Length: 485
Image 1 (cartoon, rainbow, N blue to C red):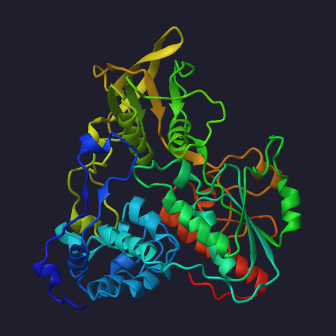
Image 2: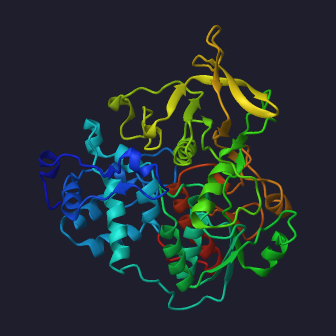
Image 3: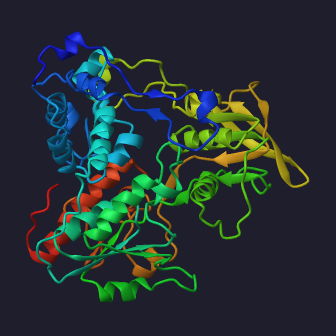
């Protein structure tokens, strides 16, 4: 590395946020980038480890430490330190199609596996990644990469989330005629309709889609594949028209809470609530659905993950009177035992930027029933639970709740419509069955990747699977592939 003693001389310095009182007034991104000098200093902290676990293991096995897309992190850190930003961008894009997405919303397992994290002081990898790609866009370095020759093969991608986008871009660059079918009005999947704008503004997606269109990808919007909608496309016909089809539709079936009072008005899935606000911000029509708004209400978010945090931040920006987040799991430890966990992802207390905006967090809580007046929810009846989720007698309590948002994750992809019509096999968890070697389903020339195949997961895993699925499809069509992993 250019600065051998950088990790000894320079303290970790992370991006800062705009003050809470200011950022909750709008839905704009509020992360304040580091200066160029500060970013280069942070890159100089990279240690040139003998075994850089931040890379990942080079396999697509969940649970392994480091970066799922195998970013060459020490290499781009060194390039940033040397001031060679354009080469750093080339290096970063050699493994990750969309570092502007991961640089904003990835939980950064690479930082958890950084050697400096043994001392709780990892390199600010995510910050550096975001700085590289934002600089690349600002300087016009990210030109369309148009295939020098066309193969004459046509591929359909169903779903335009991160897995579908990554798969489509790679296949287009291999020379295939790629068509992406998206049921909504714009591309992005959960990136556009689930992730709030204050975490990632949607022009970040739009500029990448424009690049892909210039590379030859054709997007078909408002085109649901399968299902009973009058404009739905028959997936069987689609399979006949194309040489290969990739199912990248995500895991959209939400986990419900079937307890007494569930039928009351004011209880909604998170993914009924979040997309509405994203559409309002972008000026997109809500298509006549009833507004779900938190303004002036006591809001309770059930579920302690990222989606729950997104509900919290959105509720505060809509003017919620109070926001309480309930998690059935016990409170994690403040600090992990490094000797037991490093370089793997540790279970420890984390506070998201949205939670820090004023939410009350309750752990080890089970909701037993909803109470309402005139058909509308007004209270939650709850009880504390032990480490086996058994209720603890005498710990019952109630919470005021005029809006309840269920953010308990997703169980599997929606089966009705597309999957049932195609008749693809499902695994024991209800996801599309396709292995990690060729990503093929039980149907000939039908492939699957991302959350639809693996279940709910991270954006960075979706990008990884999309890239690997593209390699598998290219191999299937051409007998070999030169696409990178």
